[in-house]
Structure formats: C-alpha cells, structure tokens
Length: 421
Image 1: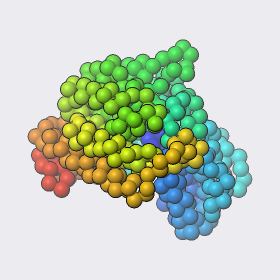
Image 2: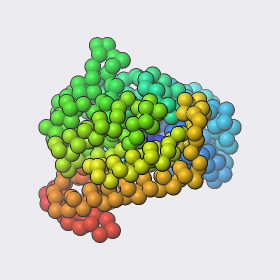
Image 3: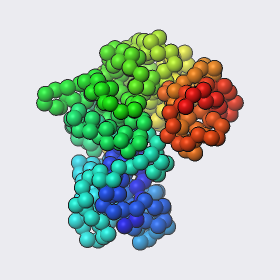
C-alpha cells in the first residue's frame, strides 16, 4: 500500500500525523507523492475559514490528479463539518479527532479503504528516522482538547475537553524516538499549560518538564505554544537553568486592547502580558518570543487597533503570526455585533505583519556575532538554532548534526560559521 499524509494547521496536528505515519509504516505502507498514492490521509485544520478552504482545495486537487486515490479526511475541519468534507471528491472515509490515533486500525478493517494493510501490526512498530519526509525534529503530543472558552475559537468543540498523556507514556515515546536518532523533540498540546490537570494523581507541566529532563538520552526540547497565564515564573526559571530546553517561547497575545481581550474572553490583560515577556527577555535576552495576533475582531475600533501599534514595535517580541478575524459558526464571536469590514480587516492585518517583519529583522540583527547551538537540517547547509534562527552554513555537514554556529551575516538571509561539531 502506497500512502501520502497531508497535514494542515498546528503542531498538535503535526504530532498526530507523525503517529499516523508510524502506524502506516508498521502496517506495511510506503510513503509516496500524492499523485502515486493508493491512500491519502488529509489531516485538516479549522482555525480559520482560510484553513477550511485550503483543505477543500487540496482534496479536490488530489482527486483530480489521482482519481484512484482513496482519501481519508480527519482533523478539526473533518470533525466540525462531516457532511461538507464527506461530499468532496475522492473522500471515502471520515475519522473524527477522537478516533484519529486509531485511524490505521479503523481503515484497515474497511475493505474498500484498507486494502494492502496489515492493521494488527501494532502502533509505532517502525519508528520514523530523521530525514524521512524531510523531518529532522520530532513532535510529540502531550495533551489535546481545551476547557477554555475563547469567544472566537471553535477548537474546544472539535477537540473536546483537555486530555493528557501520562508522564510515563511520554517518557517512553521520547526514549523511543531518540533511540531512532532524533536529537530534538517538540512537546505540543492544544492547551499545553493545562497538562496533567485531568490525570490522577494530578500533575503539572513543570512535572513533565522535570521528567523529560531526566531522560538519559542526547536530546533537546522545544516547548510548543503556551497560554500567557500558564507560562509561570517556575517554567521560565526551569528553561533558563536547564540547557536541554530551548530559549524559544510562543505566547499568544491576540490583542493589545484590554477591551478586546475581555470580549475575546482571554484571561489576562496587556499589563500582565507585558510584564511576562519583559521578564523572559530580562532573564533570557537571546530568547525567541513569538505571539499570535487577531486583526479585525468584532467591535474593534480604531482606538483598539491603535493599542497594537503602540505596544508591539517596542516589545521584546521576535515574530508575529497574524490572523485576520474569521467567523467560526457556533462561537460566541460569530454572533457579535460590530463586525469589521473585510477591507479594514485586511489592511489591519497588513499593518501587523509589517510590524512583525520589523521585529524579526531587529532580532536577527541583534544575534549577529553570537554563537548559538543548533541542529543541521535539509542537506546539512541549514541550521536551526536553539532560539529558532535559520542560519545557512557552508556545505560539508550532514543532516541532524548538533553544532555551534557563529552568526556572521544578515544580508538576504542569515549566514554562519560552524565553530564546533
């Protein structure tokens, strides 16, 4: 059986796809381009209308280019709009998020979908090695679901309540993938900061970080997105003191107006967020600190938007992910009055992205002359540093080699010199 996996959206979806891929390989599958695949798994996202549209376009394209492919759709869009996704050309099966990690077993028991599979081979029987499908780091899902009720977000209804993987299982997973050769692991979750609150006995994200730090393997970690209220002083202190955790934070702000934050049902103020990122920058001046911003939330006035323009350029943030507001049917925000005109939303998003370009440029320039640890990617001529810089180096290295690199140029793209293997 020849297969392809197409993944949209967040790191949690990426982690889910990695697990599905391991199961497909264990069941005898071979990864090929979608034009040659017998089976195509499309792991969809539904965080915005654009994400929905991207999944639809991709499914139609695959069906057009490979009319014999059996397409299995899963993920948040497939869970939220089963009839809509199920009617797309080539789609023979929908797997809801709650059954996603059993996808191979589910389709293996279906004659018209799972032909050529041995679904009883067991999960994760053939670990993915570095370099397969272009991957050098491995993403593991520690948690899924969310109990928060941000007024714009549909994900709690597509992912359900928060559910955490046990520390013991995560330690086994990290040990397994590092034994397969991976040297960097990203720990992901839909609401990662809530990790362990649903387990008995109850544990915390900090407990998980301590357990991962104790694994006797050569591995470093990236912590995926954390809500600002969950990035506690203890977590920051742990990252600052322990060399295995990258100085790389993603802390969604969403808006710099307290009035809009309240309408979004975000449980913090700009002052709280400012003090948090300032404290991280003071403790870890080389840290990458990214954020998400929503442009054009219902009721956003010129004065509200001006709060973004006032705060962001002088902040220690290093990159922005900007999302034009998108109505998600079923959310509180979709029913709000005061919708911002589409042209205004687009213009505000452009302004935020321009600020983000400036923040990233400033951060990159500040790193010239520094020496950072990193890992080689692609053909060995690209390094991703601990603080998430992408640095080009001369040829001669292999992929997946731990190096230290001196950043020596900014130009069109960062360049560097390897100071030690």
